[in-house]
Image 1 (cartoon, rainbow, N blue to C red):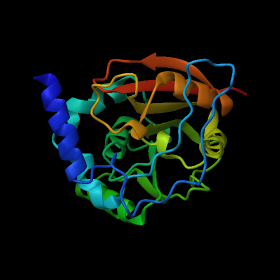
Image 2: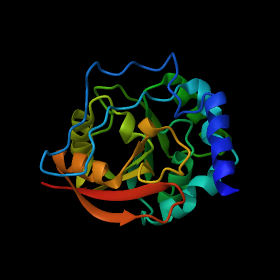
Image 3: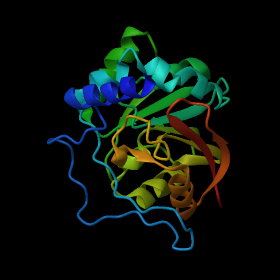
Image 4: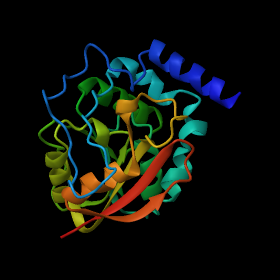
Length: 240
């Protein structure tokens, strides 16, 4: 019964142009780009970055089922955020995690919410305004720049975003520069190890892939959590 439900969900997501379905208006992949971890790591598969979701599928980000499928509050609990911290929600979309982060860092804290699509940021601003959230700063990023200030971020959060970076190592370099020396980087990615996770293959990653690629980007794994139904939660610190 569970497998049938997941198959139906995957089909429904495809029919509604869900974010993990490549769309005609999504930016094209860089021709021939493949992410190759160290050759000395057997069993770690190379991959090609996925096409980002379009803002036209933004309603999928606030679907009612997401609470049960991704358990955002449990995920954020594991990050142990403190009032007054400065955090960044990179690839924030409509703000689904940004307004939750804002509540956790409090009025003296700050959330930078970045996205490469102005349309997403317009939806994010509307959502935070409706919730009277005043400590979220919307930032228009580009493939070449996160738009984040240097050495200023306590924690960077990427939820189902890293696998879409067109140049992962350049992207990691930007995040490295944005973090404080004591900062952390949290990646949430759908588990490629689990064929029952009803997400297109190019939008899933194994934990080994994430760890190998971030090691190349000068990040060291600090914590690994596997309590979420479909996703890894991996926390890294800069390796300086």
